[in-house]
View 1 (cartoon, rainbow, N blue to C red):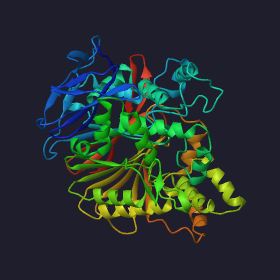
View 2: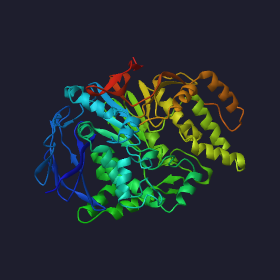
View 3: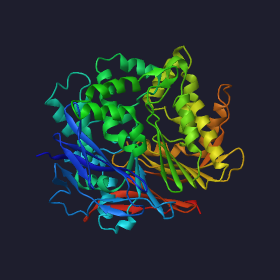
View 4: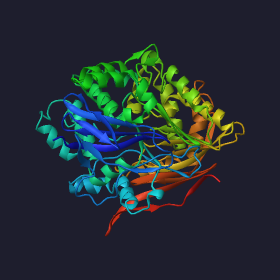
Length: 541
């Protein structure tokens, strides 16, 4: 009989539909809530994405997962509450609660790793949630990158890899292919608390660099160097194929899935044979840059009543060739601008990389971009600094930065109550409010929460604090504007909270046109993992 290897993951949920993702150990039929579908096969592995439609709005449906008619979820020894699908109300006339964060290492049995990475904030949240009334559960969760660390593997994964190939051969302890990526997802999502949380809270996801490799697509120099290695092509293809399976398809609505040609081709091929070839061909095209465009779009949109979530791919969609540096190509930016328009009260822009950073870091990145254009030794030095110091966020793609800023300002000039950019990546937590060169109607925020479960080098903490120091930032800005190649910034911002360090998760609560955020930091006490909330931040009062 077929067994459940991973999942269920509750992914897209709206007022009348839901999708549930699973991985099984053999071909079988998968039944969720009375909707039954066959698995599809990729590289010898078996998956299903069950689409439930015609659900009733504002209802709570307890569900099981049956494989070939046998119940495989919930697990027989679990004392956690039943998994539920909670549909949204029509019109968004209830409070809306969203969790978000990024950068999550797996839980480890190694004492050194466990001490270094600290308490998993998501596991701590699941502990508290398991004792709550379901009416207090989050309506949505957004994972803003680095769900897996392909370049910083755990000791357990390194031992597992060593049984498959020599660690003395490139890429060493980093993952090399599809099967090794699968191992990372299983390691990250298999622990009981996380598995239950993902089965219960609808989750949206997007990748960042460590899902593929640190500094992924930092610059064309970076790509030229990595593409010259013997192992990168297989590594990137494995990353994109597993991302499509484990993360991307769950971001899509039933209507989008019905129109997705790749999804249709995978189902057609994978239910009778194996769809590995389909997805390898797709990944090859997705990685290519042709005439300033990429072969696929990973960005997507979700609507939650009066809240719109617009998630931007800030990694795979970058344009780097021929000196053209863009965070995303023109075609994708046009899609972003089009989907930013609509009837809502709050726009949430999900970007794994922050738009507004500590001022010193932001100014340094804009200056570095200009310096790296030089063709002499100064340009080569600037490129080394860019890669060594991770100077590859929005401010280092200044054209894209300004375009995003203009879009945010335009939306803020309309009828929305707030525009919030939700980000991670930088291993500290902060909230900063933006102001523009003219008055706007909405409150505009950069909200950054990272990491969920990781660490930061001790020396980085005082550096990040210093990077927010206004006198230093103002001096650097005056120096920056000495260059005729750097235009004055179209936005300014003021830190309202942080920087906080340590594992944390953020909650964003919307009540009509009001909104606030609470940052909760994780720790472990005598009774297990816990969350310590900081004072709420009133985003719109």
